[in-house]
Amino acid sequence: MAVSRACRTCGTMQEFRIFNDAERAAVRAEKGAGHFVDDYWRCTAVGCRWYQRYLNRGEDGLLPEELKIKAVPAE
Image (cartoon, rainbow, N blue to C red; front, side, top):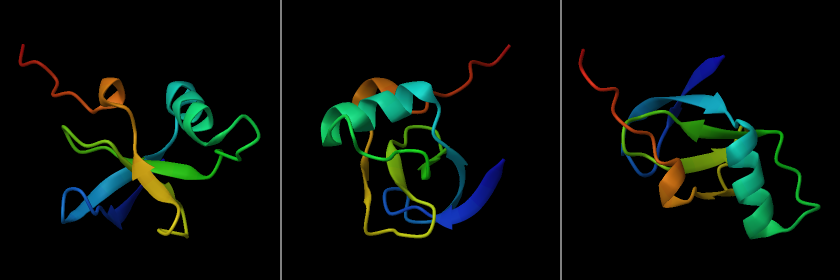
């Protein structure tokens, strides 16, 4: 499931999706083991690492570089 949200990094409206397991683990490692991460969403634009809570943009940040969205190679 994806939703359209304003991305602070991209500066435009982008599709966001809920975190996968690797993204949850990265934010838990940063914020602490007990931090609730099941309502974070991330921008799906190529090159973006921005994430935020579904309804609270005040709880946001950047995922580690290795979790940046990569371009799909042309076939």
